[in-house]
Image (cartoon, rainbow, N blue to C red; front, side, top):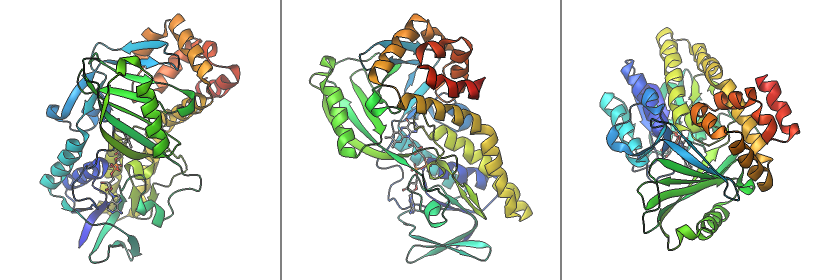
Length: 393
Ligand SMILES: Cc1cc2nc3c(=O)[nH]c(=O)nc-3n(C[C@H](O)[C@H](O)[C@H](O)COP(=O)(O)OP(=O)(O)OC[C@H]3O[C@@H](n4cnc5c(N)ncnc54)[C@H](O)[C@@H]3O)c2cc1C
């Protein structure tokens, strides 16, 4: 079967891109290995408020809006940062993936489930895809097939230093009212830094509790258990479900365009270095890629696809660079450094500054503000601020 655009992977980013392309009038096919879209859950489901600008999100899929966060240091110095309007939402991610796939199909995309792509075969102007029995081809092929992307691997679009982190998450029932539903909790520890443990309340007594880091699942599960066991408030908690997943490490050397092939979303390592969140950036990139793909197909000139790479760089390079720097700084801090940093931030009145300038999806504005006010120099060892001065000065 021949398509204008053939997408490998019916995750949220692939199906969003598919919808954009059918709405532009192109014939789109999506190949997905799963039987049921979105299952199993591999996400905390926390999205910054920008989601409402970058994609459709029906209110019925929002479990709870959050106004802010409690940020905890290793010895539990706590900063509370909050806005007067919702800053983020926790969503039903499985239902959201299914909703986005349905919208793509309703718009006219053809979705093929239970099709595990095992190999790619570039022929003539098209892309041939072999999965044992059936062949699909497209004038453009898109790898939206997640962090283990076969498209990226087979076309050598990665680089040798490409990395992934593992993530583990529990759905926990605490058996009694514990949570203020306005805020999530983020717990920092040097051993998992730049990762952190998140506690995202779904109700006053249940929460998604998870973390990501450079450890195997067994170790991550043990860390979560130790975290839950160590807090008296959590006594009697019950783990209802366990989830695992992988988070690609943002790689600025990654090739995202090669001839008539594009990578999108996790397959392109389009994730925030500080939080591992990939949905909002993936959706924005889907829009940028769709604009380039439309022009390339209309003019029958695949060279135009390079505009996707250029515009991705223009939109995200600085933000991702700042986040990489923040991530590096956090990785190098000890528990004592983190405690000191939290104490100092509180003394310097940084809760108000973070509340005002902090955004889940745009962290460079906050870093710049802390830099401008001289606070970064007071909370971080000198050697670490030098790099930031170069970046922000
Ligand atoms: C534990 C955890 C928590 C997270 N929390 C958040 C969060 O709170 N907020 C946030 O923004 N992000 C979060 N993320 C990241 C987010 O889930 C990803 O960035 C997002 O899923 C990327 O979407 P995608 O469509 O690019 O890829 P995916 O969602 O991975 O979809 C890829 C699709 O491709 C299919 N596929 C793969 N290989 C093949 C093949 N060979 N043939 C056919 N189909 C194939 C897969 O089955 C899948 O359906 C989290 C990730 C993890 C692991």
